Image (cartoon, rainbow, N blue to C red; front, side, top):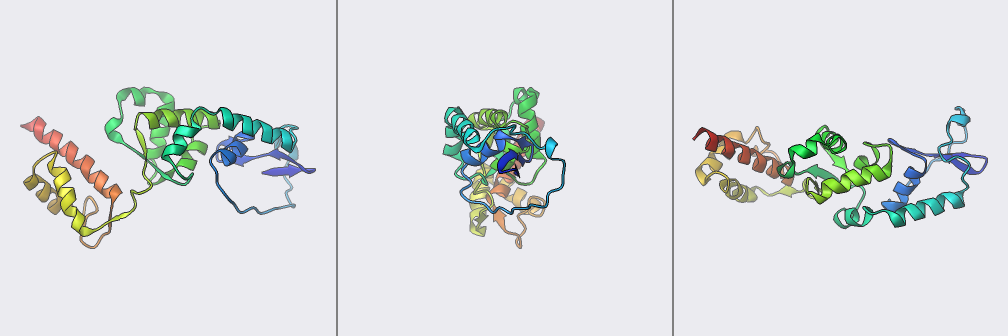
Length: 219
């Protein structure tokens, strides 16, 4: 955030700028933050005017109006409690039509390129306009292509591996599932000395589905 002669003149947050940044902060309830004031800025002030000549009262009025009229905020906030919640792809619901949609594919590719993506990253780091980010995100959320993966990093006890066998068995059979876990433990992150979580369980489930399709195809 840049201030000049007592007024806010410019804001930046990843690819967002201007009103979008302040709207994002108000809309998604960051709750609190740490601010550091630096009065020694020596850059070109003329270039940093994404807020034009708006005074603080005008900025707040525009932000409040935008948040009140946002058609996506309510649905997104019902599924994500925090802006730092982790977002993941549900590949099972992904269609060719989604990948042929340029805007959707941009979000999908961004998630695939990262090990961990938060709601905040997707809303600020893919498109330069927050309303566009929310629109595409909401479309993918409504199709269950993206899901809240907040709990995916929670550890699974070793005893729950039996449950994983049962889940995989639904797509193959129990003998195949047991053999799969025995042979692929290191490959899929289920070695005895490793901690297991829901993300790995999801990965194994997707792997077993693909394996079952191959078995079915070759038979």
